[in-house]
Amino acid sequence: MTRILLGFTLALFLAGTSLAHNGITNFMPAWPDPSTFVLDGEEDDWGWYDTDNFGLKPEQFESANGQHFEQGPNPNPEDFSASFLMAWSPLPDNAIYAFARVQDDVLISKEIKYGWWNDEYLQLQADFDHGGGIYQDEQILGYRLGFTPIGSKDEGGQLPPHRDEDGGLFQWGGFPPVTYVQTTILPAGSTNLAENVEYTYEVRHTPYAIYSIHGPDDATLHINLPEQIVHFNPCFHDADIVDDAQTRQDMWTQVGNSWMCDHDGEVCPDYLLVPTDMVDPYPIWDDSDYAGPLGRHGHLMGQAGPTAVEATTWARIKSYVSE
Ligand SMILES: [Ca+2]
Ligand SMILES: [Ca+2]
Ligand SMILES: [Ca+2]
Ligand SMILES: [Ca+2]
Image (cartoon, rainbow, N blue to C red):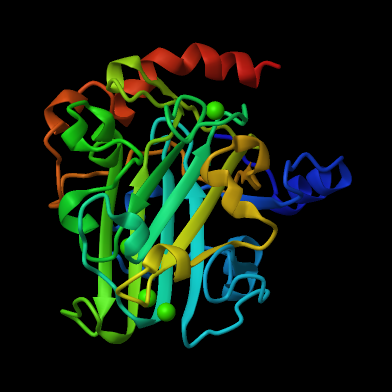
């Protein structure tokens, strides 16, 4: 397994020309041993994570819409503050891991499916193959994967703008084995209009270079590799107002107009996939304890999970390694 000193990698990269399309380059470390990942919405399994170097901290988020628009980073922590951790894994696990913690003064959680712009919401915006281009509607060039703090643990992730009611397979990527999600909330049992809540999201996602609204058979996996650069951005919606939420709620995303990553890979932040001291042999995360939503398309996904990646992609890996 590749072992490269983190400091050496960072120094090499920082010495080079900035490649980031919106001027931001973040660094995403490899999960040293995915058998230690526990999908429970709790952070203790992230104890290995170098938060200072890799995490997005509350002062790195600004509002692109709503009450705190153009007020700079983290202007009102009592209203909203969030932190975000993200890691990658190489084959055969080949996944993206994310953890987010949010403090919020008013929980709006009507949890009307596909009404995500009116609720608290975390959207992961991704153009993993770094190809750029507009993807808001057909999702071919990139895609958006969203979660709500209460509903997603039972309903899985959402891939807007398409809906189950439209009659297609659009949402397949929101469920295992592509996406696993767990959330927590304090005080426990909080529901719509609860005050001063804290909630978390924990996600494991298999990345796709090309998503397909027609189903997994038409999609193309993305293969994570050390020192690869991907386009990615987390975006939090803070709804505090029952009515007129779409115009007044804040949309918190990394400082630097990163929110535009919701539709165009060209203006996403860059993330460099940083190797760490990874266990060898590298395991696949064991999902046998998973008890969350399987989704109504789950039965279609048996061949698309991470275990299927290994046999089909070694030629690509070998060609990369020999370059
Ligand atoms: Ca955990
Ligand atoms: Ca709030
Ligand atoms: Ca792409
Ligand atoms: Ca709120």
